[in-house]
Length: 421
Image 1 (cartoon, one colour):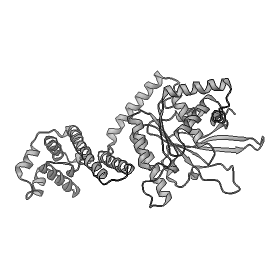
Image 2 (spheres, rainbow, N blue to C red):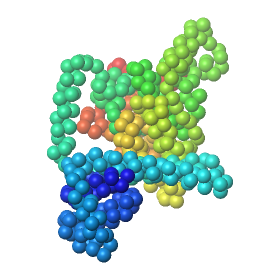
Image 3 (cartoon, rainbow, N blue to C red):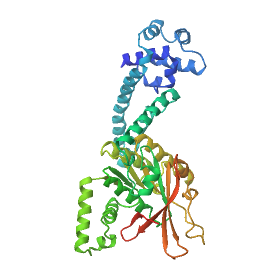
Image 4 (cartoon, helix red, strand yellow):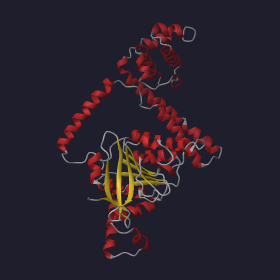
């Protein structure tokens, strides 16, 4: 541990730019000379003074013995290998902090705190450890551009090898696939609908499409029970009315359809978590578990306004804004698409059927800002036929086209399907 600390600080003394690339703080170091020298380097750099040997020695003349400073400076650790030393040191520091979790939890148990509160606080403790070792840092374009060129070359090669195949995860709606390329890594997708317009049904359709195309969807519901969701999914996928499944009044062919649908999803075995009005920290923790333990490669959350905020003392719009920002961070952290249902405001009296817009996301404009893709559900009366027409309004897509997509909403099996016009 001491060797790793001194080697890292040696690199910093030879190249102050490392201070801005690594996220290692003096307080994380147990070797006192290393801690004091790193602190001196940070303080000097903050004042605009190059933290070389002369400056550090002068700064610490009454604090650290010169032989200790020289031992760090003359170690011969190549500053070009700073990432190796920083990674080794980060693992040691993280391990030490994880060991500290045990007495922290034991103290709470000894104080007879509520088990759920203990789990929540332990999760917050772990989150702080992860944030402390965040990979986010200032990066030069000279690092990013080669990665972009490599990505382009790989994409060209993929197109040759997989001509005509969808790049992202199947949405189940062909036109939506054409416009978006499917759900992609690190995307935050919002599916908005007014009350009873079918936002949960749309989400279930996307879950079915993902599972049917060989992916492993994870589901978090803070509204309906997981059992109810699975019933709807089986009804939708087998095209057997949900009312018949609930009542047990099924024909022979319907029984066969339900059994086949049940068998298919039993074998594919998606995983999910349900808790009414679960708090934000619980949602984040369970999302991480679904990815790390159950290897889910896409996540569906129903729905954002039902998540209990971490801070309840701020105005409601700020609470929802914080939740939306957390969803955005979650998509980037987990490196998977996160598709979230969101409620739209009811139209003003006398304006039923009015076309919704992204301004209608309920309780916070932050939802509109954070989404990479935003799809709104719209049902309107056809002025010629008098029948209801439904649309998926692709209202926002970063770096992509928007379009109104005609869909058919089959209420009996609670399913949206593309409608050919």
